[in-house]
Length: 234
Image (tube, rainbow, N blue to C red):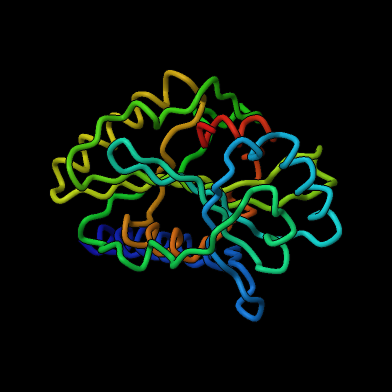
């Protein structure tokens, strides 16, 4: 009996240390720098040329940025989150600053996932097309994709990224159905899958709100310009 208790205790301790280590490596946008959320109104200019320009400007000082897609019924929007002084360098996107929509979301209506590669042997993200645009949503259901990234020039000109998906729906059953559909579509057009780890949907939602970036645990998740555009379905 005592050995069972010891094993259970060690298991719980390992989970606690694992969760703590994740937060030790967590990075979030700098609180002393004014950040904002911006709606991209000129979608035609959100393309590879824009991302190349963004990388050239970000290479001077690496920054944590977020690209987000919000879907509600037939309506879709692309958003950018980052330092005011940096984002405002891209007037060609015709940006409009918004209140943070995550403030209106209620955790009881949210299911969250973080994505990773299907196999530990894989080192490159492959994606043929966005897996969000055809997911059926009812009434007030909403679907969110978040790519939190940092451009590091030394890493093959790619964006080191953390990718999250959120579903907002009134019941657990409806959220489960929508997320199942997302994962099914994702498996057919990419080598991305849901990350399995001991963090709850509530904890992932907090990471989403903070635009947290985990460079160590996502060290293999690098995206090209075209893959970001494809994921967002621009």
